[in-house]
Length: 148
Image (tube, rainbow, N blue to C red; front, side):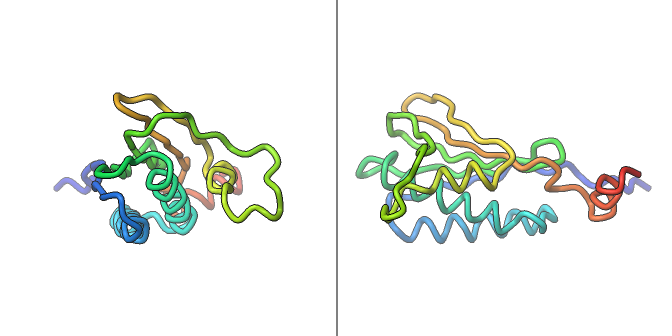
């Protein structure tokens, strides 16, 4: 009898350029993470999905287009990718003004994720972020924390 769990498969969904796509993307991320047994950082991942999806809608998806959200198992972690067809390279603001009402999405992503970046695609770009150790079993996390 084989007790090995099957490998996890990447999951993706395309969203149109409309406001309701952001909460739909966040709900999809929660669903996938629950299926994969990711609990500890699920809220952080979902928040980053919201921020990257919002950026794709506002800056990366021209009218009539949309964005692709991909969630991938990555070693013992999770990788989020948002693909859009817009140009430009997003960057974390160096010193956001306290009175600004927007512009902090990538700052949140850079603080919550273990790594993040931007890759080219034709057309457009992929903005991604990763969490390492997100899919480890709770007993494995406890062993890592105590050095056992």
